[in-house]
Picture (spheres, rainbow, N blue to C red):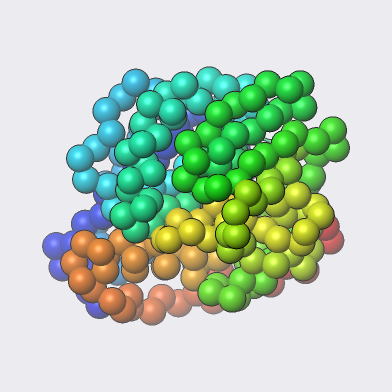
Length: 242
Ligand code: GLN
C-alpha cells in the first residue's frame, strides 16, 4: 500500500534516561520503514512531568541502568494507568530491557532496592550478581529467528501464564534458566534485546507499523521492502559467538 496522507504518532518514552546500546535506532527503523512507504511519522519524546500526547499509535521504550530506572520510576507510575489502557486497547508497543522490566510488576535490584513497575505484564525481575551479556538468537513462532544483544543483571520471571517472544537458542534471555526470551501480550512486545532490535528484525518493525495502521485506518497489508541488507545483517549477527 502507499502512504497517502497516513501518519503515525510514535510515543518514545524517556529517550534521555532509557537509551542503551543503540535503542534509539528502533525509532529510526520505524521512521525509515514508514518513510519508504510514504507514511508520515511524528515522534513525541516523553520526559518526566511532560504531558502524554492525545493520540498514540505506537509506544516505544528502551533500556537503562538501574540508576536511570530509579530516576524515571516515579513518573512512570503516574502515567502507568494510561499506558496500561493503551496496551490493553491494542496499541502496538515495544519495550526493551529496562522498560520491559518496569512494564512488569517490579524490579528488585541486587542491592535490594525495589523499583515498582506498572504491571502491564504480569512478571517480576530480580537482580543477579552476574550480568547476562552477549549475543542472542531466539526462535519466535510469529517472527521466526529473532537476533539481538543483551546486557542485564535482572532476571525476569513470569507470574502468570504468559507467552514469551521466543525460545532462546543462544544467550540467556529472560533469566538464563527457562530458555525463554521476552514476552508477547496483546500487541505489545517486551524483550531484553538491544542492538537495536528493529533494524535487524524487520518483521517485528513491520508488525508494529502494520498493526498501528490497521487500528487507525483499517489497512491490513504493508508493501514489501527490499530487506537484503537487513537479511545479511541478521545472518552476521546470528553467526556471532555468544
Ligand atoms: N538495569 C537493568 C539491568 O541491569 C536493565 C539494563 C538494560 O536496560 N540493559 O537488569
